[in-house]
Length: 370
Image (cartoon, rainbow, N blue to C red; front, side, top):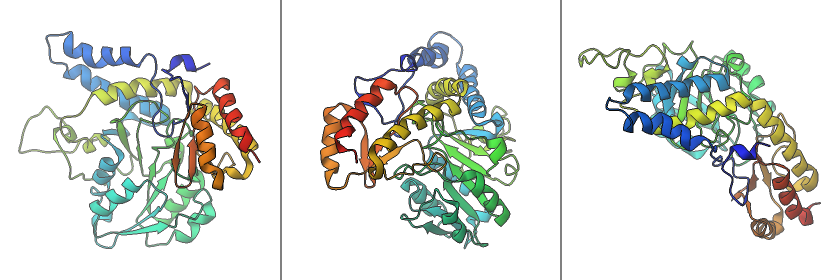
């Protein structure tokens, strides 16, 4: 039903944990909002371009049920993370403690270690199931300053128990930072209800918005405490004041914005996020779970990711032991696009993966079912 809205390849495309498919309407929207103000007028395009970025913030606010002023565009998560943690005196002091998982995306660990050289990074071991609250509890000690939580873990297919975990982090007196790179668009998330301290995300995966349009969200209660070091004229309360002797932080999350911004990535992403905000993450998740359940039912123990809706991400992780390469060859021959990590094959059904796609996948996997 939704395939007609997207540019689909001839292959059965199940790489939505990596890059989502573009909307059919994306090129026209991009031309209208990026190129036309530039090419079609003799006036400078910045007023139109800045409106594009503001629309990006508005669409994010719709998707996550929050206020647009709490979102700030970022180039990528690593850069946004560095800007954020270096803005907080609590984290830049010697001996600050950050808890994360060895299954978090490595770039997050790299950025934290370089940005906070005097902090202690503590890791929940990779073999512990972070989809369970019981896994987190023993690690939540009173000396922790920040808990870094991936809403969904890219290589394990696990989903963090945000609704249960965030209140415990808050009761501990620690800050919380949620990474939604692997969940935005497929796992519903209501920021007004969950109220973490900070959130980082991107648009390239389930939101089908392309690379370069990441975002930082700052809880309104934390805005005043953030004093970014990496600033530019768009971090200023009034970027067009042009007084080199007077810098004042913007009163919104845009204090993290920095110098002259990119526009093109946000023109694409705003259009795609608007589509999914209209559609609703609940509908995407319902379809995703229906397809995942068919994989679970067929393959049994070959499914290495959780098989419970509240604990699984949008991705099934499959490992067939000694038959792994044989299964991969069969899927390749069936023209099914997926990828492989150490834990197994990654398969991620999106809203546009309909019955024909799933039938092709299940028929290719059927000879290897338990």
